[in-house]
Image (cartoon, rainbow over all chains, first blue to last red; front, side):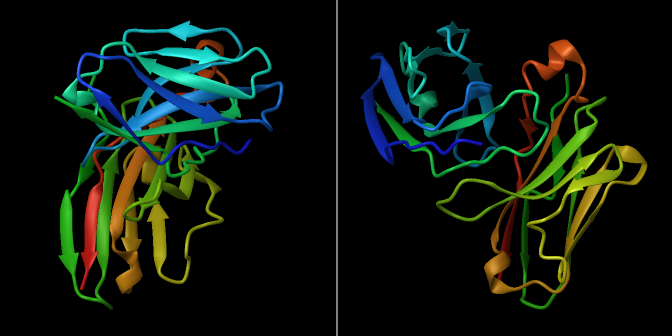
Length: 111
Length: 120
């Protein structure tokens, strides 16, 4: 799986959009970008994934650059409950193997 | 649907003692993973099962760690004897059977809340 680079921490005001970047410059053509998050004292939770088109679901939006070397996870209206560590993971979608977590980005949403 | 169940939630033991963790995956999920998460780091795979067979145990310290998944459902992870550096959160995850086109397209793993182990 391709390696990813994320900032170690970010802050966001409640109600504002949180934009979490991820660099994956060595991504291969068959690798997807997955995002998980881990709220304190809980296990990681799947958020969203995509290949090359932008994706949106009830939790977030995923913007992938045209060259696929970077992406941004967008939480449109951050709440205090969105405070968590966010992990960007690149992997082949039909791989059943384990997720390769890095250290992720610790997002703090403030009142 | 019910999520991945793990027990106990917390465990405190002294070094050289033994400990076991239990995981009940989501019903029908063929693949089960055990991860170790040390404070400040992301989870790291210890072992992966497909049904009751081991797919990957390359990072499992086999001199002290063991895991089994009898009947391809529940799983237990054991540490014997424990060391101070085993203090961590042990996470269990499950995912649906590989090869199902629609499900494979998502390849999502579902995690339990974990067991926090403190070795004194």
